Image (cartoon, rainbow, N blue to C red; front, top):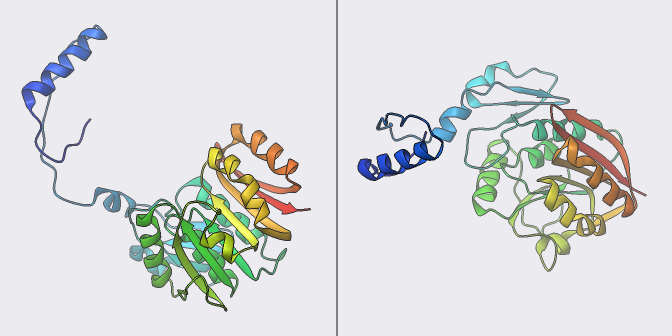
Length: 255
């Protein structure tokens, strides 16, 4: 299946498919073209997602507003362009980890590194009345995050402001950035991917306060050994893991 912004050249398309079919020695499949309704199909597909019950948190779309339990911290996430509506195992794993550290730490300032849709920053802001920095390299993500943070009744502040609230910033890493100037942090949550978790490890640990906590996710179980080995070399202690299917979320404490 393929999707095009404009109607493709059917002759050229058939020639390409004929060539590929010949390479694989199979019959040439019939080509069918269908015009789709002009919709935001990402948003449409996300509307069918069911609410997510994760630890102390309950994520839901506006269409499920009547299902929120009284004993849960509610987070309303509408479908959008940024990653992280709560349906992915890594997002759920982070929410479980944030719930788990509630009685382990009383942070003064926290960082959501690679915030995507902002769901984890919202969770921390609703669990603790503290200052939070939500950052992402993607301006679409930070725009979406700011919208979601406002929708959930969390105060938006500037990075230099004091007091509780969440500041949303677009930047790449710590060096010479707002992240470095605003830290160090009592809690850093990074739900990204294994490779950037390895590359950013020295900066993440360097910007963590003594006895602070890190929650890492976005890695597969088969990738966790390299992550754990590196962070332990950087004087971090693995406290707990949250495996969900093939994905893993990890809690570390600074020694």
